[in-house]
Image 1 (cartoon, one colour):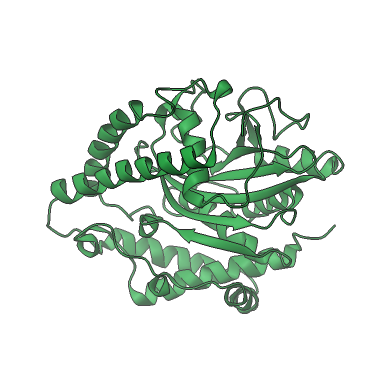
Image 2 (cartoon, helix red, strand yellow):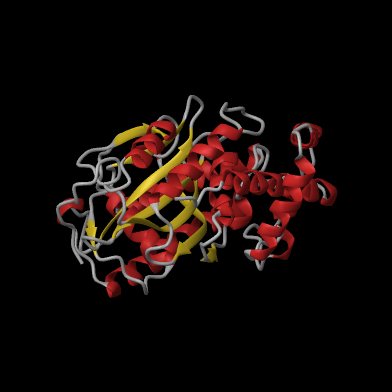
Amino acid sequence: MSSQSKPSIPNIFEDSERVINVLNWESHITQHPGTYKNCFVRRFTHVKNLESSVLHEYLNVIVEDEATDTWTRLIVERQTDQDQVIVGRWSATKGYHENWKPEDCFYRSHAVAIGSSGSSSGNSSGPAGDLPLPLATRSFQKGKFGVKELARLLRKTHELHPRYSLAWYNCYWYSYKVFEGVRAISHLSFDDHFWDYFSWRGKPWRIIFGVTKAVKLAARTFKILRRHQPVHGGPPDPRDLEFDITDIASSAEDYDKSLREIIDILNKNIPKESNADTPEANAAIQEFVNETKEQSNWESYRDIGKHIAYSTGWKPMSDLPIKPILENQDELLEAPTDEESVALDESLFVFLGQLHEANLDAE
């Protein structure tokens, strides 16, 4: 497997990095269906950036051009001023392997980023300011999830709450809703891989200040480790990089080991006192729930969305087989009460019901 010249498909396969507003991206793709007829989404990875001061979250999206057997990776994210797609950070690569594990594919993309000098996208996801912690990976079948459907999903999610707000409609909200919004595309099926750090998928108060400080310490340590990570004997030129499956799997194990060193640092450095369940967090939850229930027909949307969620294998966080990473995580991570969790799940159902009404998979 090796890098090759990109297909002639603008807004996905680009020679240099571009940041595109999701409305412009959707408009171009839906107005030129022939150009994108062979482009399909193969994988989402929901990522938390430990290098960001706000622990920014975004989606890494793998797109495959079936006509040339070539794939690349995009970034989908919400910034304070817009929702956007970043293209051209990674070069086109020949051969998307069906037998790749999420760990292999995730690691490979970020091994390339080590040697990249691409620009940062604001405070979020540029290689210079990115220490990606994978939270969840969702894999799609070949030839099923067209980029036109992704474009509609990004646009509709934006239109439902177009303005950034720190408390709720932030980068966490947008990446989570896009990740889960694929459930409303009726013909899709997918497989999920939940990483050890999935419970960190967040809300604004999810990781409190003491934890954030320790995460930054760990991130700096990991950045040093990553700088000297052996990949074919040294830092590669990403344009000349070649891998085989054995190399990728071995490097993925080293990468995971380095991530686990972050957890060791956290468990040694985080203070044991609890700061969970703050009034500010509870008030923010209630405000969000109240706003959701002020929407017209919210109960109808909720019922439709709940059916969609459960029919596509959705489970509440408490039912997922996720083991907490931190020894004293329950004390350190501010989380909603059981009643608030139910209300937050209902807000997801309302969202799915609204997406269903938008008919994202219409031709």
